[in-house]
Structure formats: C-alpha cells, structure tokens
Length: 337
Image (spheres, rainbow, N blue to C red):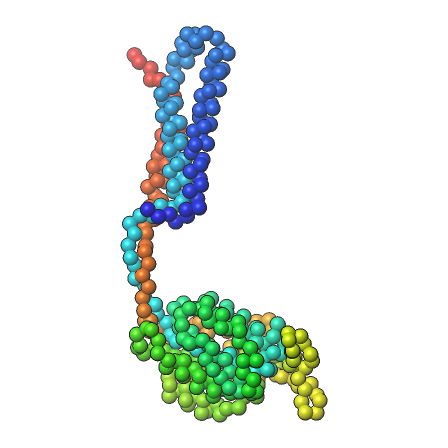
C-alpha cells in the first residue's frame, strides 16, 4: 500500500487522544457517583443506562477518527506499470552573446533578460527536445539536443560574451551550428521530426545574407523563429573588468556607442515562423508555445511509472457510517415488557 499524502498520517494521533477523553469522562462519572451516595442506590438510579452501549459508542467514534485520518492520507492500492509516450519537436535556441547584448535598456541587461525569458519558456515546454547555441561573430553548440531542461538552464547560466570574443552578429554561423545540433546522433531512435530554430538577439550588426540563410533553413526543413531583445531608442554598452564597470564602449572618435534593437533583420529571418518581442516591461516570447503546437510532433520514447488507484472512498464511507451509528444508538437500555 502507498499513500498519496503520507504527511497526514500524523492525524492518527487524534485516535488515542479521543480514546483518552472517553476514559477521562468515564472516570469523572465514577467519581461523581462515589460522591453522590451508596453504590447500591446509585446503581438503581442509573439502571436505565447501559455501560456496554457507552463503550460501543466510544469505540465507534475512535474507529471513525482512525478511518478519517486514513482518508486524509489517501490510501493507494493496485499498483501497475503505465507507459507514457514522449512526443514533441526539436528546437535549438540560438542566443546572441555579442557585446551589444550587455546594454541595459531592458533590465538587468539584454542578455540576462533573454536568459530569464528562455528559462520561463523551458518551464512551459513539455516533451520537446531543446538545444542551445550561442553566437556572436562566431558560434558553437553550448548544449546538444536534450529533454533535460535543467541541463539547458545550467548551460544558459554560463553563456557570456567572453566565450565568443569575435565581434558581430552572424546569423549564418548560428544556423550552421543549429544544423549540426539537429544532425548530431542521439540515444533515441531516429525518425522524422519537426525542426525549429529560435534566434534571440538584438539584431544589431548582423553580417550575413538573410535570404541565403532562409534558403538554407528551408532546405534543411528548419522553421526559424526570432525574438528581438531591447529598445529602439538606443543605449550605451557597458564595459566590465573583473566584475566592475569601467566605462562604456566608444568608437574611434571617442564617442560613446549607442546600440539599438534592429527588428527588420529578425523579422525577415522569421518569415516562415513568427517574430516575438522582449521589451522593457513585456514579452511575447511565451506565444511560441502555441506556434510549436502547430508543428508535427514525433515520438521520442516512452517512460514507465507505477500508477496506483486511490481508495479513500471506502474508509470515508465506513467512518461516516460509524459516526452516524454513534449518534443514532442510545446509551439507554431497552425497556422490557
């Protein structure tokens, strides 16, 4: 037998407490009778009261309390193995870690805000295999396709511009790494799966032919989604050394560089998919869940787990029956003719 809420088994302690109350009440009655007068006279005056019935009524209450405690704990019987198929799509998230993603026009920064939104997205996904690619002027696979979302979160936490010092925003490199992630061998049986690429970037300083990228994606049956991070008004790019801010990025003339969200390139990339915006106070990225639901899902495998049938109804029924019987049974003896 298993329990749905084993923490409620402590309620069984109420049974000895109730039994103790009945014993205390019986002891108090006996003390009162002893003070009242002679035992023979007391027995005659209380002859109509059945001590046996009182004991039965007390037993009904104690048993009822025990069964109510068992009901709270949720007894589970009849374990059996149940197989649940895992279905979903393959999606690679390409995260821009170029220096412009350190701008703070969205708090705490574009990169950190993007990480937080991706983590929220992972919390809403069910059964899809997720991979992570980070890119700037170059790209590499940070996490291969997996259903272990906690692993993706760990790799996401360490994504940083220092990992890819090559400047720029090369969407083409991100796509090529995503293709490698899709084609990498896995432990699961290979079959046709829908492929989705989510590019999360501010879209600035991209150095790729967008039409060529789209054509390559279509040839690989990859649907590109894009999410723009930041604001169009512009913001400076802070520079850090040993965790301390030392100033802002400047151009060759000594002017502070302003970085802006450039949505046109991202929207062009998402021609076959959809574009989502991560702004200062809002985000439409969760809407990608609906878009993914429209894709054909493939079976990745199956999980087996033990399933129990909850049987709280019977102890509850018997408990209520006992408590009702206790109320209906009189402690008076039946009158004989």
